[in-house]
Image (cartoon, rainbow, N blue to C red):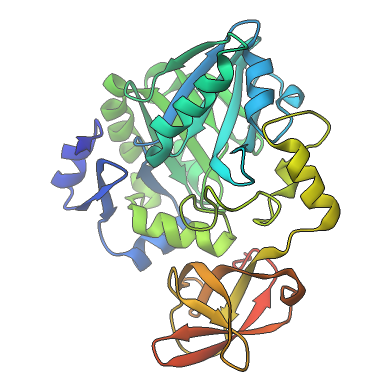
Length: 361
């Protein structure tokens, strides 16, 4: 089990630690609901240093990224980031990721912790005929997510950059918390605004301590992975391994907006055919009409009790006080407003398909 550079800090704070993607990670400190509300209304900090980082550089960097990713990375300019996915050869998804353009001919790819080795092998395979420079820097870098509506105000005193001017999916490389050359990225997995901070492992403890000093007047709190999951689910953000995987296409998952057929990429021809015909199933969002909590892998059934799909993610929404979830159903049954049922033990609980996001401020 690997530790992040802050594992001992989390333990000293009383975090409940669990194994996650090969790392010893904090799942909660004060409880999911408290931490969830902290991010929705104030500012909270996640250690997500288990995430993977690849540097792709050189004259062939863009060619490689365009080949392996579904979105159009040629649209990126320095200081901009892009959400994308890595399609596989059989209609599914190797991983979802964020691509940052750091310099001309240099990109940072941020991938999911559980997929680091798989992603590296997949990209390396396509690079054999392209020849971009690749470096896996995952072990050397830490990542903090400072999230919530008060993040800008709370963090402004520890950087010379005007944080309010960094637009969503843009970033600056600047001083932060007394450390130079930190990536300050207006991205996150919560839907409540804020930043993600990339720095070297040797710098992250200083940054963590400075962030909590600066945020003391804003009631800043550390937040664990459990609240990260409830926050992302309220926004309908996909989680790899649940809502998307090696067998789900980006079109089925509602990720057509990051699937650009203006270029060729891995399996693009087959995905273009799927788009023209329309996928046979779709990922839908639903709210339970009665009390209950939908869980991953629960069956979705019709009014006659016949299985029509499966829940991929579900929880009791802390913000809304009701059961919410995502799941795949046949496209003909995926209309917003349609009724479905979630099999929770012996009971088929009625639910309504809704438009995302679940949570709206």
